[in-house]
Length: 95
Image (cartoon, rainbow, N blue to C red; front, side, top):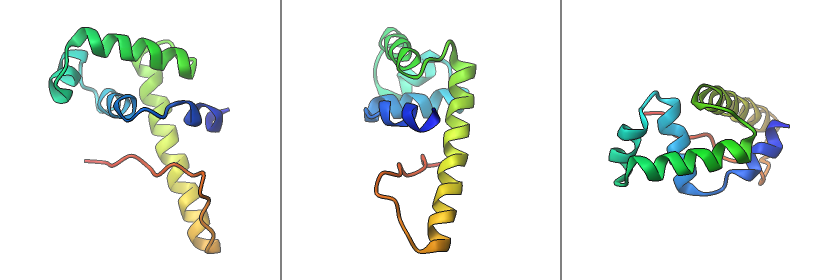
């Protein structure tokens, strides 16, 4: 489920957009931050929603937070056992 969705988001630009939207930025603010237009961000968001099976930015923000916490827990479990899973995506940077 969630793990399958994580593998679908690979593009660094998409990851940056997801992180900024999860922080509560508007499309205009995201566009300004990334040096593009609001319309480009809207198109990216449509593609992201389709890939992840989500309907809106609230669901996207919730998905992002769940993923962030899941990655932290899997990292803690791996450090306890001394094993690192090479397929684990590192958690997004928190500013």
